[in-house]
Amino acid sequence: MQRSLVARIIDCIFLSIGIAVVGLIVMFFSALLGGLTFYTLLTAAITIGSITLVIVYMFTSINRRLLSRVIIGFIVLGALSVAGREGFQAYEASITMMSDQDVDLREYKPFAEHTKAKRLEPSSKLVLRDDLPRLDGATALYPLYSAFVQAVYPEKNYDLYESEVMANTTPQAYENLINGTVDIIFAAGPSEEQREMAKNKGVELTLTPIGKEAFVFFVNAANPVTGLTTKQIQDIYTGSVTDWSEVGGKPGAIQAFQRPENSGSQTMLLKVMGNKQPMAAPREDIASGMGGIISQTADYKNYKNAIGYSFLYFATEMVQNGNIRLLEVDGVKPDKKTIRDGTYPLTAEFYAVTAGSSNPHVGRFIEWIRSAQGQTLVEQTGYTPMIDSH
Image 1 (cartoon, rainbow, N blue to C red):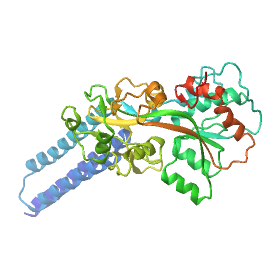
Image 2: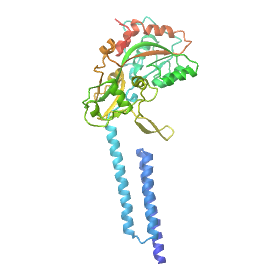
Image 3: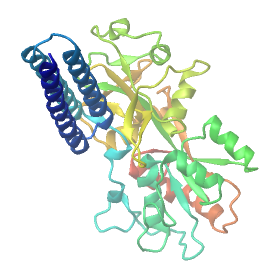
Image 4: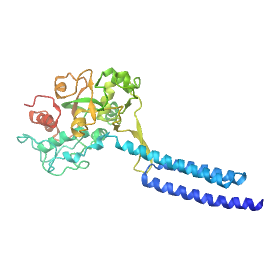
């Protein structure tokens, strides 16, 4: 009996070493493949289960062969879980995403050799050489104010994030303006939170409209739904309509993506919603810069049942995704004609926003943007001007 117990203890030692080695191998591959949380939990489950069986083996009559088979079964189930996870992630990666990161803004830098920013002909009537207003703004408007800079500012390299002409996205641009880091930002109107931030800083935001744009909703190109009413959009984003069959489509749960809080498009969605509160946005866990895991609003993924939104120029010109289709809203298609004549219901102005800058050229620059030359660049870039530039 004593020798049998000693033999079992020796077996347990070797089994524990084997389990530890398997755990280390799994943790090594988790570091290579990412998804540390998943692999850590999986390893912990396999290890705890195996150790429990080893303890049972020590103090019961369970035989070694059965124990080995059960532990091997744990490991096989773990391997299948890994394979399933990696397969799902591969499928996820194959789905078209649509986010700010899809656009390389360096292609629109002013004065770059092959810049996509439009050039003004003939030369600008306004030329600035010093005391350049510091600019920032929304991703979708960078091609426009880059064209303004190319027409008015001196030729040099303007770094996207550390120069007089930056592109830090709408939330950061508003923060920079309110804190006095920049003189003008180009963006949609501020959110309530941004207005409150300015008020708390004793800053008054001045919004000068410089163009018009359509706020658009889009779906997978294979989705048979071609249009929605404003009420249906509200019902989808409050969660009271959850299936495409309820709005004329094929049966399938609607995946309604949203944009980060205080972004220009999210602020516009809230205006569309009126006094109705949008449901919680789909979220995703990502690795943070500090090595932890944070949860953030998920970027749009073009699943067959997805719906998302943006502004017309960004969705059609900057991203150029042929796998999505823009929806009519209240029976009207979003295009330059319906924006100009006001028949598209979700038409919005965008602005040059200031906050009491002391820069001597801010007023002249905005006045020029509103002039025929500035409005010509608005139209050439792909937006709808405030005035007829011809």
